[in-house]
Structures are given as structure tokens and as C-alpha cells.
Length: 254
Image 1: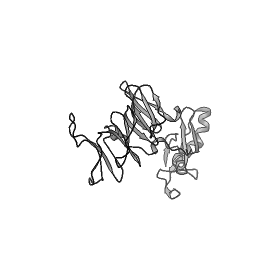
Image 2 (image 1 turned 135 degrees about the vertical axis):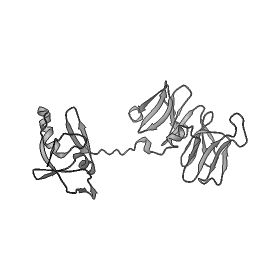
Image 3 (image 1 turned 30 degrees about the vertical axis):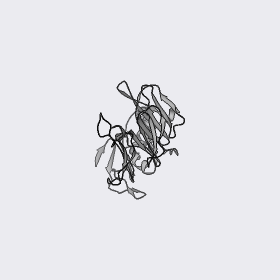
Image 4 (image 1 turned 180 degrees about the horizontal axis):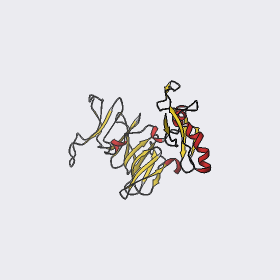
């Protein structure tokens, strides 16, 4: 037999809730009890509960958080009132913006996004000489194994973003081009740090702030007066201003 002092913490044992919460709210006192570590196995819908359970006065007690989350519930602990709250998990039918199709990986875009691709084709911007132009300069597409290399435009783009129909990139403005190199359209006269998320293009525009517009160049609007676009994740837009990183929540702002 082991002498165990039960306190509400990350584990949230059911015994703790029964014996501690009512008295804690009234007197903020804890009760010390003697328990046995149990040896029974517990499963929920075929999933075994890995944490220890305890035996107290003939009743088995299990970790409250693990049991609740296995049953699809949300568990929250308020340290100020010493209260455990169990509620149904909230399901939002509208997916967070990061779960929608992105035009390129955040890490790649941080390196000027000179490469983009899918399971069928890889698109890469190439410039032979930094200071001089060459007939080889441009954006190419090729199979993931490097075969079937084809030049689709002579523009040496950066911040390449890809969807199922078009390639978007920056080259003294923002362009859209069909995946076969046809139908090149200039969507905006200025722009850098281009990021495609869902149906929207997000970009910085020199020193005048951060904008968004539809993939066809319509509905352009300013999001911020200052700052350089960094990334978008979980409905948050992150940007750089005065050597510091800030963010705004797009869902709350609009």
C-alpha cells in the first residue's frame, strides 16, 4: 500500500475531482487518502488506456483527461477557480485557412520560392548568370525524376505558387500563367513575397503594406498599411515590421 496525496494536475484523476473540487472551492483544502495502484486493463472502443488507475474503497478511478478525450470530449482546467470543465468537442464546419490548398510550402517560400510542384510536375525558376541575361533563363517544368524538361516562360520568377490550373509568380509584378506556358496574364503591377492560400493571393507591395486579391486579380484590398508578409497559418497572417514578427487574425478581422 502506498500513501498518495492526490492533487488536480495534468492527469486529472476522477478521485481528485470527487474529493478535492467541492472542498477546494469552499476551503481550498486538500484531503489525503490511501489508495492502491490497480492492475486492471481498461479499453475504450478498443483503445487501451495507458495511464495508471487506482483502487479506493472498492472503486477503480481512472485519469479524467485521458478518459474524456478518448470519448471525444474537451477537458479544461481553470487554475484560478480550481475547476475542471468537460464539454463536447466543438466542430467547426469551416476549415482553418491553412487546411485549404496552399500554393507552396512556407519553408520554400521563405527561400524566395524558386521551386514548386505536385505529384506530376516540378516547376523551377532558373537564371544562369546573376548579372547577365541568358537564353536559358526562365521557368521550366519537368517530371519529378527530371525527365521531359520544358521551358514554359522566359521570365525568371520568384515566389512560385501552384494550383491545379495555373502557376503564379513574381517578376516585376505578379503574374499568372497556364501550366503549359500559355495565357500569361499580369495580375498586379507590383508585388513580392507572394503566397497563395485557397482562392486568395496574399502579397507585399513595396513599402505600402500587405494586400490580398482573388486568383484572377479581382477584389484587391489592403490588409495592413505597413509590414512584409511572412506566412499564413491557422487563420493568422504573420508579418515583419521593424525587425519584429507580428500577426493578425484574418477570421476576426474580416
